[in-house]
Image 1: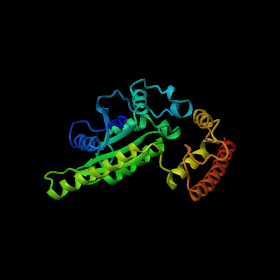
Image 2 (image 1 turned 45 degrees about the vertical axis):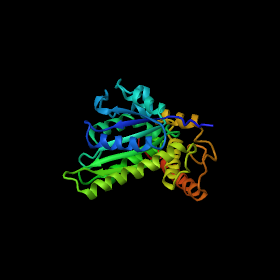
Image 3 (image 1 turned 90 degrees about the horizontal axis):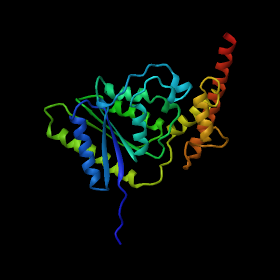
Length: 272
């Protein structure tokens, strides 16, 4: 009996303004993954998206994302991410950071840092640099994706300064191949991996903060309350095994954080 594998929808959030090294790295990634399982790659070019820079008004934090004064493609992009099985965050390194297009995109979805939602999605990070910057940009995008809820399943950074030596070309190839193998394995794995210590600390830190901010940030408090994340005994955003030592450390950290937040709020109230 032939077993037909389900085609996985992969959305590429492309931060490059041109079809250059970053696009070629993503195409190489796609080719390697297609050898392991059926995938449908869709490129979303941020350069072509209608995305206004964040105005810093905080309306999305306090009232909800529907109150953002910029009516453009931000929510459309979010829905595309929700419809995909996995997301590729791809960017060249510009000025030792992500591209301007990628930064605007991240800024416009800042409310997801407070109200994470992509827990059933995998993510992979692809960066390209002339010489330096891959590691720092990957760390930043890894943090963004994890806080947004993604399970990060692979990272690759290639060096593209010309002329490329044969050794560097081979190193780039190995980097993409390693990430493709890890990403394909994650796409084939239905269960989510258990969270690491930093993931657990983020959960308890946010839980401590938003449990105290009903008056300051009602949208955040309501979201966390409706998700059940403020209920007693909840260990993580989703029902997966959590290392008991990580949970104990997170619980203590959350308790200390909540106490400090209450103290700060009382002092602010007294000063006003």
